[in-house]
Image (cartoon, rainbow, N blue to C red; front, side):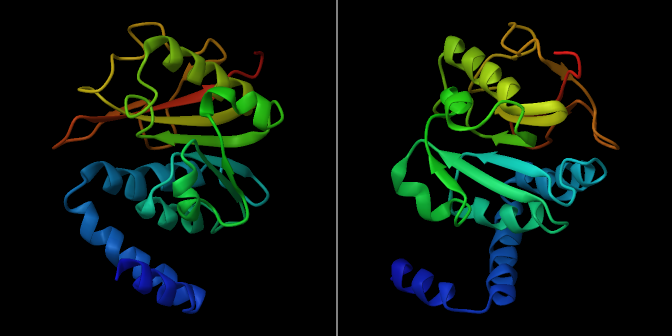
Length: 204
């Protein structure tokens, strides 16, 4: 039944599809305050930088049904969104035409160095990339594909992994930095989710 509904939804005009996804996501937000912060605080803050500007390149890491809403929001000012997930079965939830099935630990093998203006990685570290050594490799991969002065967002949970700043997981090329109107670390009320924002060092 769900497959039939998705097939019907794909035939609807794009504005109606977006409207429908926004309704579904709004209902989910009430149960997931971290998603509300992403939509209402993080993306607007990124729009105040060049990270989501016209012709900017953005990478979204980790795809699920609910993440399909974010791609259009990322691209609304002309940015180009790509997505990646290691699981082949979630390919339908990636950015259509710009999705790669692959391992985020090998980003530098999949994309050119210094390629993205922003890389958004929410709910992957601690939810698949669990080993501290792999988490360090993930940060190194993020630093490799982000442009100098580009932005990296990491969403993680305090009950799923150790603090990356305290345990030296963070990549030296990435500087913990605040976005306009959004702190470098934001602890989401009502859950264990934390958002950290980093900027690629210009001299790295």
